[in-house]
Image (cartoon, rainbow, N blue to C red; front, side, top):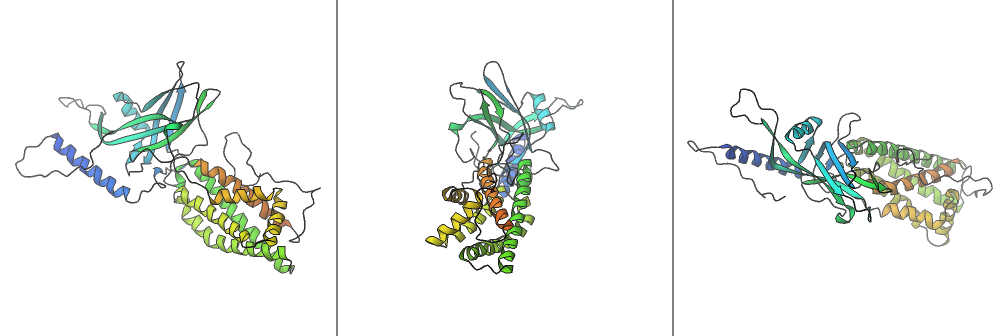
Length: 385
């Protein structure tokens, strides 16, 4: 959509002839002024769905497919702010008004059976567009629709036509369509851009799981340090594990309060950043030892995880080098899940050991699953099963 860059205020003077265009110009100027204020604090990683009360979802989309291989998506609810700072507030009442006008927020997409690629559902808003809605008053002549709503447009876009960024300042990606034997369905694990952890039920669940992970890691680190001191362990492995646990405990001690009080209502990127910094602390404490010391420590740690050294380091490196994509938050959470389960498994085992340096018994050692098992709702897991 081609929109004006500037909407100037009307120069009102006494005696001037006025018509509805003057009021529309004034309204557009106020809309642009409001958007300019909102966009001051908007970045590429904090726009998106806005929080609602309780367990209410901020977006509702229905999906169907007809006999002509055409996907039909319909949006009935959305509360969000775009990357440009434009507010979207589509409620069931709004949808009903638009339906009465014949302006249902709907999109169609012809499926290419040879490709069957993933698709994304994208909503755009023209805040300066005017869609008349509502029932005319019985005593009003000539009759008119009493209200206007912005122009909304829903589109379905193939994966090859997208990138990691949003389409523009008037757009927001709301859903992903996947295919199973050529049958389309809404991907349940897709998380659209969110302005807050509280904007999406999956993010609330993830936050709770990560909070449990941090608390458990803090507890295990404390117990490991106490055990090494109490038993006066002085072998090289014990010293290296002690240093790792001390530095990790110090990091968690300063980070957990901020995570508890600030990140609960912050954008998801804050939570991901905490995990990346934790991975860096662990990786850096392993890398300070060179030569045989580094090899000995890594071999000892990976032995308790039942992983080879390369796989263990890959999990850390993948977490440290994680690429966060705000338009598809779940991609980052997949790496997070592998990291949290592995670290929890490792520190839980170190916490259970009577003596740091004791080798595992391969005959009785039971492997902890690192990869999350898929449950009925495909919800990712971050803790040990």
